[in-house]
Length: 411
Image (cartoon, rainbow, N blue to C red; front, side, top):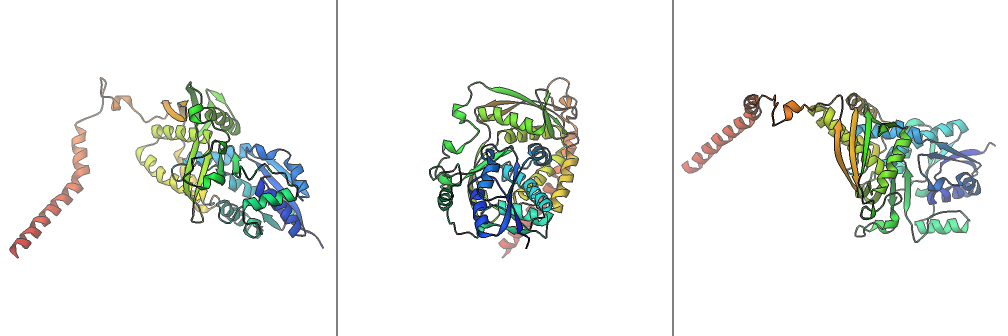
């Protein structure tokens, strides 16, 4: 009888390292690990060898860095997607690409099941499984972390040590870290107590702003139709541009986020994020939109941005509504081209200049000095029309108030 095949989403971290060994012991199946390189650094070292040692028969590693940035992160950037006002959605933006990779590999290998290492209270289980169900509704999904015997990360660590599984995590530094080019997410350990300030060892790529460079640094970013294409006039691929900004932003302490957020499953969690490039680009893009979008489109897009951020966070990337909203976003980006110059200094971003051939800013209309072409007399009629319904309401209310008072006095 042909052995069944399980394709495992494999990062090489604690959960997936333990999971591969556990699956190999619990299931009489061929285990194939699949890793998408979205820009993570630490867990990729000797990953193939590690997968084989823990029970995998095949180990795929795909370099998806440019695809991740140009086909996924840029969509989130154009949308202005920031979850609950703070989180640039680094992990959430990466999950649909990994779900697609898992399905493609499972089809190629004629696999029977896809397994992931997400917890039963996390967001990623929803993102992975909704994505897989959408792309491959016939595929069986395994979630060992929801069913296995380990109740704590400490028990997983003990299992890893007992089975000679190499892990970088320790009981002294029990952080769960997810990294890609768009940002890093850190949770667990001391961070679970909201009274605790984030320990410095929780941060991976950013300097403490207090210890960052004492000299400000200027950076000019060129956008074309909402997408950043160059820095200081030098063109870069998407992955190169984000890597560059992560490096200089991290040196200046840019992109540290300490957040209480609402998870998909209904609980609140405390997360630490580092996203220097994402924070820089989102602010620059927002400034360019303020220069180039008309008032009504800009205001309406703020609502769409919030909706898209929620959908990305909730794992609904492949939904019809997401595609429809992104069509709207793309239409708004036609004239979002130009240059934004920023100053980076000790955790702060200051906008120095904004230029665009599609700028809707007109100095002759805006100035209070010589050369003013604005018709001040037009404001009288404009204000009268804007205020007319509210003036009417107030007259009616005053009249009824007088009648009511007279009736009361008459009684």
